[in-house]
Length: 263
Image 1 (cartoon, rainbow, N blue to C red):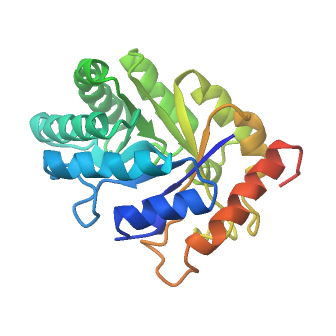
Image 2 (image 1 turned 180 degrees about the horizontal axis):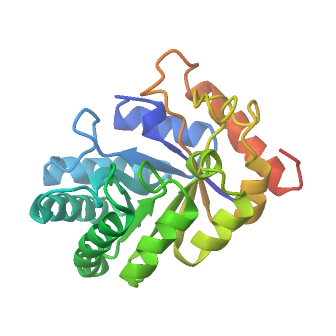
């Protein structure tokens, strides 16, 4: 099993501390939140990018993904979205990350319009991503919360360098069973974002195994061969406990579920 965490759980933490936290807790990778308020973002200079690569390489930790905020289904001008996608792809390539995470962001647009916009923009980015050796992954999120929503768009693109991230919280809150979500996303899946919370109506993050999200079913469906990334949303819930102290137990919990644990 490959286990990672998102820097959404350690907002503003310097790269050296992120890498040390990963190494000390047995995490093989990190999903880097690529927002201007974070240490790693598309505005980094070449020498700064090389420094990030050296920090990760020295600790034997991988950059799993660049988690961007491009909204590919949003209404508006294509060119601004294309520029954001290309900058994220090139940042990922420079950091040696295999994946870029993006959002749908379709808002209240009609489904067909939002899908067509997202597929067009992702299709335009696909060849650039292929040349860079990166895959752009659409997360099931906001206007497209289920696996069915995300798979519909990715299938329409039909390019191997466009795929999906499975956020287990959003598909569960959308009422989709884990086995169905995985079955829909499996042909396109880059990695799985794991979470836990008290119930569908309260997304406040909890330690893995402390809530009611059917994490065991999600992990069992995904199997042991890919990446699990804990997206602990402390950035949006500052009052929750700090992530570093929870990581080792969270990783062990997912390992236990893979070994046959029930939740």
